[in-house]
Length: 133
Image (cartoon, rainbow, N blue to C red; front, side, top):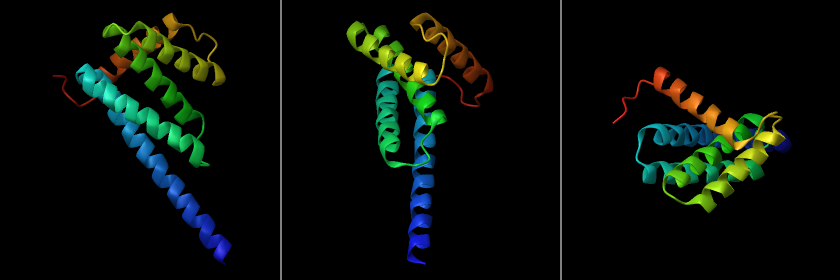
């Protein structure tokens, strides 16, 4: 009976972590689209931190979360490049490319990732109820 109770608690914790990760990631993506670069950078860095913590601790962490992590790195790359931080932008893009390759994206080139990011931003602007500043 104790083993069953322990498994239930672990699953509840994992579900809570998954929910936290989802909320933090959604917030970071909205900051990237609508906020200034400093707020977006902070939100995306926090989302990366939460994704990495979840990756090591939750049995529920899988490809959707890995994909979210890859997009966080890609968005950080775009932010850093716009601020003139080419080396950091390149580091973030490399991490995004590696994760996307691991997930099976056939074209993980920087130009393709940027194109996909632009499509995501347009899609986000069309479906979001949040008004840009």
